[in-house]
Amino acid sequence: MTQRTPKVTVRRNRTLALVSALVKGVVAAGLGLGSLTVLVMVVWISSPYPDSGPGGALRAAAGVWLLAHGAGLVRPDTLSGVPAPVGMVPLLLVLGPVWLAHRAARDAAESQEEPREGPREGARDGAAGPSRAGAFCAVTAGYLLVVAGAAAYARGGPLYADPDTLAFPVALVVAGAVAAGVWTAAGRPFGPAPSWSPLAVQEAVARTLFRRRAEAAFRSAAAGLTMLLGGGALLVAVALGRNAGAAQDAFLGLAGDWSGRIAVLLLAAALVPNAALWGAAYGLGPGFSLGTGATATPLGLDGTPALPRFPLLAAVPDQGAGALPNWAALAVPVAAALAVAWFAVRRAAPADAPRARAWSPRETVLVTLLAALGCGAGTALLTAVAGGPIGTGALSEFGPVWWLTGPAALVWTAVIGVPAALLMRLWRLRTPGWAWRRDVPEADGLPVAEADADEEEEGEGDGAGRPRRWWAPWRGRRAAAGEGGRAGPGAPASPAASSVPSPGPAPEAASGFEPYDFLPTDPWHEKGGPWHGKETREARWASLKQGSGGLMADFPAERTADRAGRTDRADRADPVPDRRAADPDGPGATP
Image (cartoon, rainbow, N blue to C red; front, top):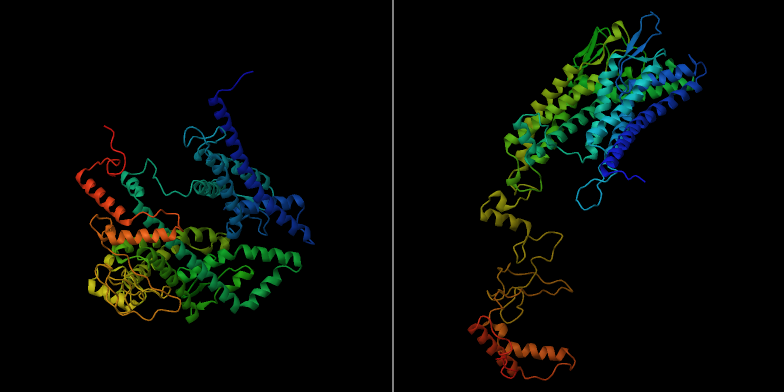
């Protein structure tokens, strides 16, 4: 019987892991395509007058699934006979395929990162898979195999994919989702930088301070982008509320049966994120195109729009110059800039941190500018896919223009966000006595008198110098201890009894509360101290004898004290004494 070598076993297991990652990519793509196909088939079955058979419905489902990845579709059956492009991607449909690809890559990378318990720490098991690059390539290849098959199957259907768009952006979207999954499985590390990058970039990424600043800028940019989307969605909702009658007429006029209306409702729901981005572009200033000859901005609707009949398009402003409600849309980018500044200042000057840990004004400005740049880049990327052609002629340009919307978001967030961040930083680093901020006096470099005044404002402190808080009312009510025992309230504490200055007259103790004395600060372990005196030894001996219940022998305390005194003198005379010779009554030392 032949036994395989460990090298052959590891190679075979890695091959199996690659095949498993490839299958996971195929399964992820199949799940997304299958779920969308089921939805399309339900609508086709419920339709009383379908335009084609089940083959056409399946090909249409494959085309819509490719559209969710950013592929451009072509509709060959038109009234003019010229194929019409469909390039507007419903952004809500993108979430499903991206999430499935991300999850498949994460699972494949996590299963390959499991270490084994062996003699070498960190050694991989024999069943461990390839590197993260191998998992990325395998999952991406498996997913793109299904994409190629769906594109080939959709040929000849009512909606087929443009072959030029399969490499970009479909392959790029899949690769980005898979890379994000592998990065998540690795713990979302920030760095190290690639070896081909400049040395200065590698050194900067290796610094912890740089990573923290980059993380703060990323979070601030995400907050600003989220505020833009939320504000755009609010603008669309308000506009639809004002034109509810026109939206209802468009909804009822597109389909007369309930199955067609459900299909229109599903399409409108998938286009809600697109409408939010259109509203954000409108608030930023550049607006959006409504065909080749019309543009809607807060200044007004210029030109003659080519509007198809659709419920969401009822939110388009009326033709003419803009009024005060149209100008109110400019509050959206202002709110986004303030959100960027707020999230940047939360890291620049935390409320619970001392003043010395706050960022400098230069660092605050730099992080805010980076966040503004990230917000502008994200806005440009999202608006690039939020619009697109939906036909030929006048409908070839529809939606916001990304190369105008992105720079507008950058300018708004930088011009308003940077001064707002500096003002918020100054407000957070103001004098502690003004309001709620209570910094550490030592860290802030405040004078001692100011620090004491701040503590007096907070309340009386206890003996340890800690301020009395509302959750600890007993602080400051401790009685000072005297030399001979417990002193009454208001009695000054002697230096021998306490090393902490007395807080002054203490209030009456509550019922059931018994104040305690502080421990003496004298070194009790010294040989000549009161701890080793004769009276103290006799008191301790009597207490131990009384508590023993008669178990202790009745040895005289004087003998014990004398023996201890002789032992102390012997210890001082000889650094390493003979313990058996210390007792005169005991056995002598061995000669």
